[in-house]
Amino acid sequence: MSRHLICLSFDFDALSGWIARGLTTPTPMSRGEFGAVGAKRILALLAKNNIRSTWFIPGVTIDTYPDICRSITDAGHEIGHHGWTHVPPANLTRSIEAEHLKRANEAIHKLSGHPAKGYRSPSWDLSAYTIRLLIENDFIYDSSMMGQDHHPYRARCDDIITEKGSVQFGKPTNLIEMPISWTLDDYPYFEFIRTDSVTLPGLSTARDVLKNWLDDFTYMCRTEDWGILTYTFHPFVIGRGHRMMILEELISSLTDQGAIFTTMADAAEEFIERAPLQTF
Ligand SMILES: [Zn+2]
Image 1 (cartoon, helix red, strand yellow):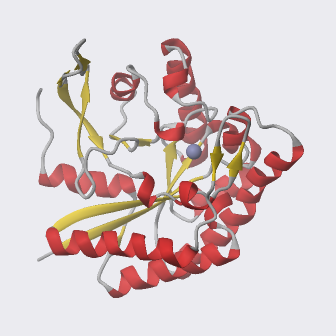
Image 2 (cartoon, helix red, strand yellow):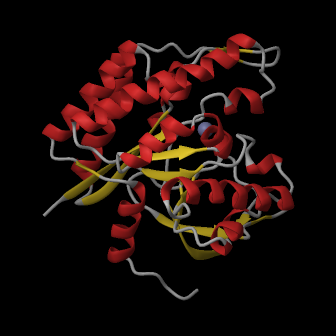
């Protein structure tokens, strides 16, 4: 019998992503602040549909919005690790990355009663050290890479990119990779960003994006008996009115098509049951 899992994941960056880019004047800060508005709308929608989801929250956001973060855990959602600040690990030294990993995990432990099982790097850019650090800190899964679409896989350590440009793959580990994609992320579709060096046009028509998101589920159902599709949303992005409308429609259409909504930790555990951990 086929079984198709959906993980709705919400990166509750709030102001942290803007701060990490040095955009700390009042208007960018207020864009992040809208995340608090969006988070409340999303929590109400999830409660109405009886869906448990996964929220990746930077430590600084837990400090800034303790009450909203408390209501997320009280509603039974999973809290995943999303850095202490929103600076991607690729831009940190190993020692700062390790320190931030522990510091944010302490905040998550305090909030939810246990450390995070899952990690998602800010801006999806891991360092050469991240996978080992996650294993050392007893994480079950990472969700920052794009090497598959419907199937988790085991993250590798120590890939070598040779001088000629070919790649020698490193050893797989027991850390489960829960793959993501920019195509299943609200941010690049919708956010208009203009800085001195870059312009992201964003502002896509929400209903066109909904079609992309639903078609990926249809394709998974056509091609796989079992699979997981992970959507990534940001409360300050998806929380705007016309985008909340497509989130509502996404949930109802996926439900009608037999999707099973679950947290990423539970989906990762289900994958481990199907493909037990190994000694590498
Ligand atoms: Zn983020």
